[in-house]
Picture 1 (cartoon, each protein chain N blue to C red):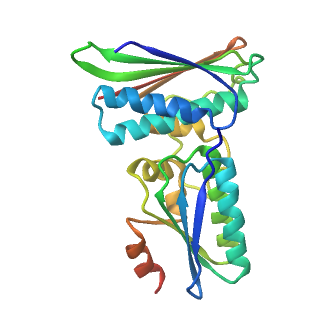
Picture 2: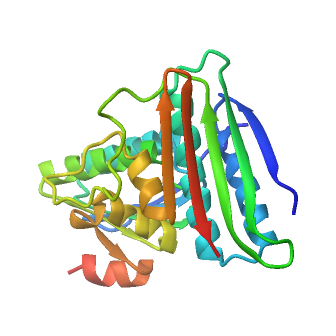
Length: 117
Length: 141
């Protein structure tokens, strides 16, 4: 009964790419996000925005993989940001300390305005 | 509302069954959506913790949902997650009130389940010995 995460990618901009998630972010979902993120980094994108508007639950294993992506972005002097989090996911990210290393925006429009600068 | 008990095999994504049950019970007692979401996330963490770390020989986790208060005036939801594994080793039980909000460097990658549960639920009690581990979590309406 595995529920696979669906991802869509918008990499039309030079520096910034958006990954939109739909579904449960567990270990498999986190690994899929990481695979896509590392492909985008290899293509030269140094800013990644994860739009979680289609995700209601993230588990701690999925979050641990998101932390690995943040570490990778810091290594290359890049930036990972999140938007459209449910209040519970945002609270969880604060509990985990992710918010210190990744900006959180209310929606994609607000994130793109900030990140495009 | 009657109490509900699930016995879940340790199979991929089976924690979502516990999460959906928590949601149905929270809706029944008219909890806010945000509180139900927090319970769902905490139940997922408690269940996958048991799946990953318990070493339970029966490869099962038992989850009991209990409505607090009365039928006409429910006051909250108590969820008990029990495994019959080897227990949490001495010194690895989380300290009361430790929500882990330390400044970094970057947060540790693993072992966040109990911290998340503590942060999202109103009260959490963990009992663990060589017979297994029981996590009792409460969220008030």
